[in-house]
Image 1 (cartoon, rainbow, N blue to C red):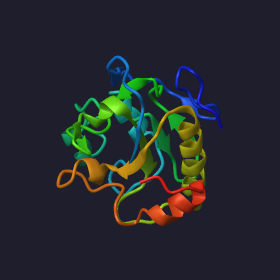
Image 2: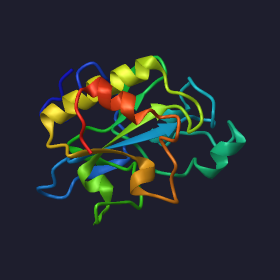
Image 3: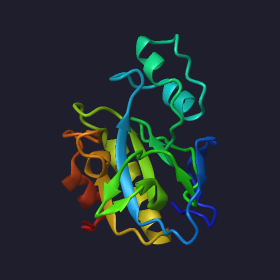
Image 4: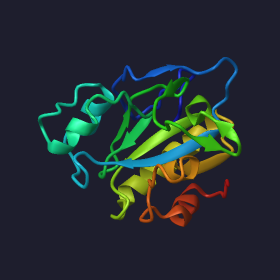
Length: 182
């Protein structure tokens, strides 16, 4: 897999989200932020995550959606349980995935990060296909950008976020990539 000059991954289905904007001038991508998402919570498959990222989630389709349907959020990538890769925002743009966040004293992590959503939840194991796809994607991103760390959403928004959760195997992820970025 490769990431082109515009920040698009070959092999990903590109579905442009409006929930992005330009990164600050001269801002390098240095951080990968791993998330999890399932809509409704604990339910996998379907198009609800895509609908959320495209601002077309129907608040009447599930009681949980009433509280999130008006959010304007996105991520650069979404990896389904079967390993399918969707891309919503080019890596050259700022996706709205981290919210209020801080990493090593730097605020606004969206400015210098790429957000990767895994279809899942805090309390269920992720699939082999997801770890494989995540490792391939991470390697491609590391070749293209000066990535210095891989973190969970919980690491940059402690107390506010818990994902990717205790079921995410950081050691396995590092072993699959073949190096040990902090």
